[in-house]
Image (cartoon, rainbow, N blue to C red; front, side, top):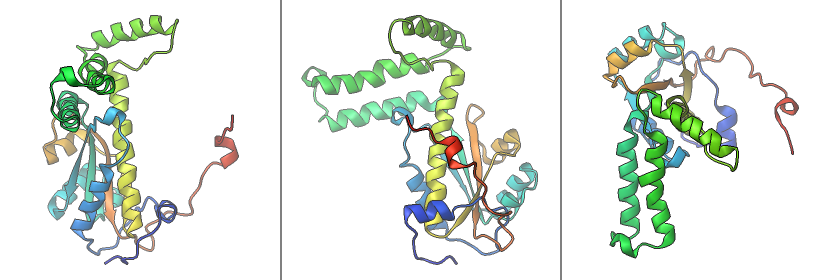
Length: 245
């Protein structure tokens, strides 16, 4: 089992690598579950939390996922697997969850008694979110894009209102959660391997994931083998990617 001493945030970030080969040693299922809980604390656009996490502990299912992931070592040798799923299709459900939460925070009082700030918060979910997320075959998104473009000629306005834009928003939030998960795993000396190479249709069938959902990434989990990291870490020189203005 892994050493129990936890790393600091900086230490965990530096320790995290994409481990391609894991040891044939079990890892604690509850600890991985705890790291998934920490993943859900990630920043998320409008607090919509358009994500789901599939925690795979069955050896048989891991074998099927590995086969659908082109037999990558990061999946084939994983002791457990976490599949991060973007759920743009659940926006109405998550919107109403936010509205219910806000009302409970405001004391479940009559709306006439809401303060200006409270009304603004509720109207954000009741009016703005539906305006941005509602679409029909991409037609409404195109109309909104054109309308927002025209308005944007005169004042700043949010422009990402097409289906493709909202899809990107959901995946960005899911990616932030995935990073939370991997850093949390690194903090307890567990290793991960995020993978994008897989047959998404087969993975959905294996896990019974709805067709409207989209797999963000598959993360192999375990303890790094001595040959599990393929070489030294390479990063573009910082001065090439850092711009101080």
